[in-house]
Length: 188
Image (cartoon, rainbow, N blue to C red; front, side, top):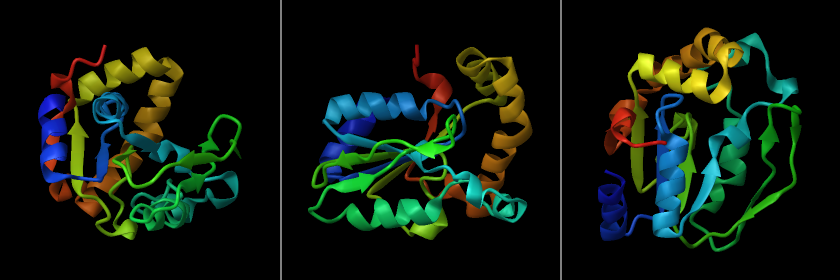
């Protein structure tokens, strides 16, 4: 499956690839494997979650409002087609602070990985969009294995409903060029 995607990227000379979709559907693993195959850079949407000062009920009511989409647009989307490197500071949800600046080269293949990568605020900035989905039982099993019971409960109570709201209101799956069943990927 990933070899077919890599071949398509090469054939179409795609420069910006987005991988959006459900939690624990294989997005990060696919991005890593494609990055290795294509010698591509990867930018993670998880690096653009909201800082504490922007977290409020009104923001979380917005479809995709739990990502700092304004900062992602300014620091990444507007720079993707240029020649200058992309500079951004990843936000760390554990420390609730920004990490050291990352310098991402431009002019090569860039993979944007993570839920909210196709947020309508950005417009269509990609050459190829992939949407990863997975059966909820498999999703829960993967989250439990990866993050433990307490985080599984948090995902079920908070993050998965926020993602589903974004998918439903923004028609994310329908906008994708390819829909990938993450259960078919060997992610071990």
